[in-house]
Amino acid sequence: MDDFMLVRDAAAKWGISERRVSSLCKDGRIDGAIRNGHAWMIPCDAGRPADRRVISGAYAKADGNRKLPLPVGISDYVVASTDCYYVDKTLMIRDVIDEKGRILMWTRPRRFGKTLNMDMLRVFFEKSGDDTSVHFRNRDIWRCGSRYVGEQGRYPVICLSFKDVKERSYAEAYALLRHVISVEADRHSYLLTSDSCSERDRRELASVIDGSASDASCACSLALLSRMLHAHHGTPAIIMIDEYDTPIQSAYANGYYEDMVSFMRVFLSSGLKDNRNLAYGFLTGILRVAKESLFSGLNNLKVYSILSSRYSSYFGFSRDEVSRMCSYYGVEDRMVDLVRWYDGYHFGSHEIFNPWSVACCLDDGCRLAPYWLATSSNDLIAKVIDGMDDDSRRQLLSLVQEGASLSTTVDTAVVYPRLHDDPPSVYSFLLMAGYLDAGDGTGDESAWSCTVSIPNLEVSKAFSREIVSRMRNIVSPSVSSEIERALVNGDGNALRDHLKGLLMRSASHFDTAKEDFFHGIVLCLCALTGGYYTTSNREAGDGRYDIQMLPYDRSRPGMLIELKAERGCSSERLKALAQEGLEQIRDRNYCVDLLSHGVGTIFLYSVAFSGKDVEIVCV
Image (cartoon, rainbow, N blue to C red; front, side, top):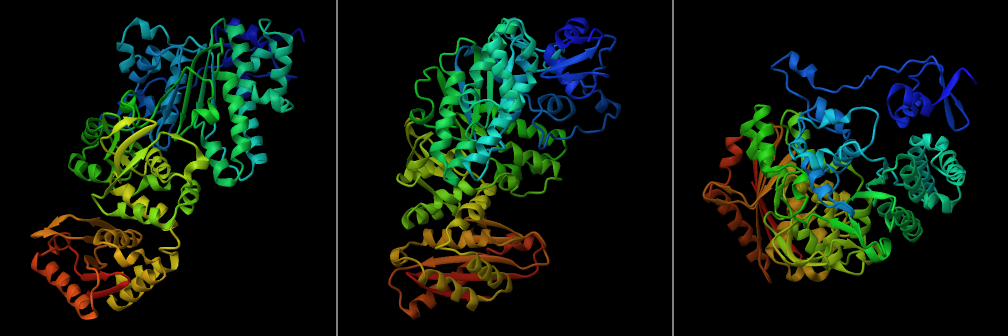
């Protein structure tokens, strides 16, 4: 093998990192490179491959009128910040450096920028033979001074993502976890030939890479990798785990929670607890799994949830950021729509827009739609709601009504088995998952007393489709389909019969229910009707209508629905109550908004409830 050199020799010859050389070999970009066991052998006369990466947005400058694309679905920081319209979040790096020595966890709903921010941190901190500073020189972090700039490119990094570990059994999930760990270990395969690492550690790393490692070695792999990286580079490592809680959520939904928590407890503790080989630790997830079940003894863990003010501006878009985006793309007049559909979250002290939905909407020609809804399975939400009692489900259903809220206590630390036993835990879960927003409150994150509500129109639709539709004992798919058909066809008699049947099949609490509860049920059913923009309690004409359904296709009928409820009504009184609602729609000219949108056919519904009885007038 005299005609070949090792990875470390090629790295020294070409002036790049060993990790980079190994990556080039695996990508087939070094002619003649061959694998010899766990090590790459490179021809001595091989030349350094050209750097193909895009390092500037120069391509966009050729046409001054060309707009940068939005980074929809892009979690690669280099691509997002170079080739796309990037909302600068690099001051997060400054705040992280100011907390050096701590394990930091950020919990946010899905699609709020967690993965992109994690990759930003990786690119900034990771030691590389390439000059990665070019990706930050025109960003906010570079103006913070030498203390922060000096941290760029200094550390070896272990970077894992558990976002795809969503298997139906523990065996399948564990196999996938081992694969994810093996792939990251292989990214550092240059350690197999490092003289700075012990022979025992090199053998153990080889077994992790080839999949032959024992369960114990796999569980302790973070400790192994960080130890070897520190020994080789002379610098403590950084451990990054994106979506750390996805395997735990899936385990709870599929019945292997205890097995998964047992593995994760050892895995995380081995790398994060009292690890002298660690400079920083970063974790992201949707939920914070309670310390006592997963992070026992991890004293330097600092969790920043949606209730925390620090870091709250780095996940999601602020109003100013969305306004600048609208200005850049020439759609300033759509700002009002974006606010109504995608604003309304409050993370700590900041008002936040859903970044995924804003980007998708602008990328889709400003078409307003519930983009966030389709980004993930909601199996866990179904399991949580299936475990609620009828009263809790009805209380949850009442939130569909616009402006509705309820008072509760939330705890950002979730112990999954308690979700069925402790109703406030359900609201905590829905709050952390992005389906609810928390108003001002008192207490701390383990017992925050506040009001919760649905933040915006998009989530109202998501709430109706993905949460309320799970309440099968109240609204089954067949019932909602029949009610949708009756609504669209202007069939008041069929609508009355279906609603009455729904109430008759439900518990006796309907006997004393108030109008706001019936409002929530009907609004839910309307929101489940496809092809309509459904709003509630909006001003129109000389008052505020209860429910309006504006068709996306103006050739379809629009609908206005007035709701009345009164206890103990006779049949004659209930019919009179329904007639009063119809007269109110006409007298207060609620139709003016539908008419202004060019809707030719408008059905007017007045629905009167009394316990389980219902009467409808439709014209």
